[in-house]
Length: 397
Image (cartoon, rainbow, N blue to C red; front, side, top):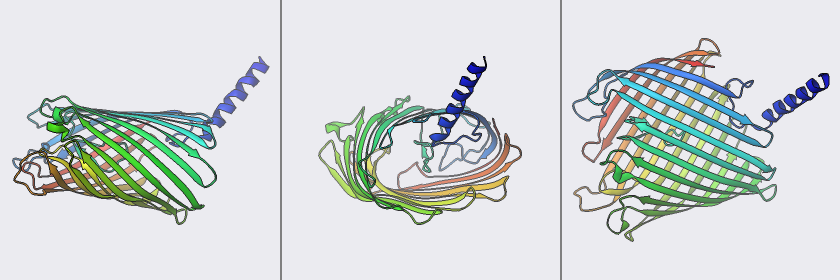
């Protein structure tokens, strides 16, 4: 029995050490492999239908349980996140309850110190959702009207040829499906592939060159496949860590989008950001993106999209913190699907958010928040201004 206990203890110690070796995403309590939480809040919304006229306000009750699971070993990491959100509207003419499900699975395996394999799967299911983010952590949250299912699957390989040269190959598949017949015209599959070569110039600087390909295929592409398109992006990349607090990353190149009817669109492609960690649990990030994107706006197949964002997290005391963000998006619509009286219409979106948090105990915290959203569009029926004020509580174990 003593020998068995000794063997068991050694095995558990080895497992604990392997957990500590490779865990890119940390849980709040490092002694556990899982975490559950419940966010509840009351919110006042002055424009629940995001309408330009005849605004309708309502009090909302929101419940958001979440499960996080981490399974790290010496060479493999498996992470899972599931989130459910239910929103009850006290005053809304349609269904008073919104529901959304999100699930993210991440698997990363280190075959050798030079070779790493990655896999991820993200699912979004919205039942009359108001705002959703396509990817977890993405600062840009888009409006979606109608029930939908969105799933994206991706896999990649990273290989270090030498101490300086690294190659990355990634592939992704996106699936969009809307329940409503009117919105089903935007059902589509998106295929993406990318190849990037990076060179370590010095311990703080990395430069590279890359190529991305994307193909968008609609279930109802129209005559001559005019809504379908293929995108080719060639770009240069740079990552510079000036010191332990300040770093900058940038990608810049050119994009060529070819549509099914033979027309083309060419424009710059930029994705860059800078992050400054100025204190414990305190940081600020600024970013800019520019690309040619597909659009769900009628009569137009694409938009030149410019996005600017800022995110701030500041720890005032060990228990009290504040976070906020601001995004500005300018979409210039192009490539009409037919005859329209609009000439190069644009749409501006401004979003602001501010959240105050106070940690009462390890498992209980309170929060107060404010959100402002405004859309100014040349296309009729898309303008709106919205304010939301909330007060909530978070329980976590």
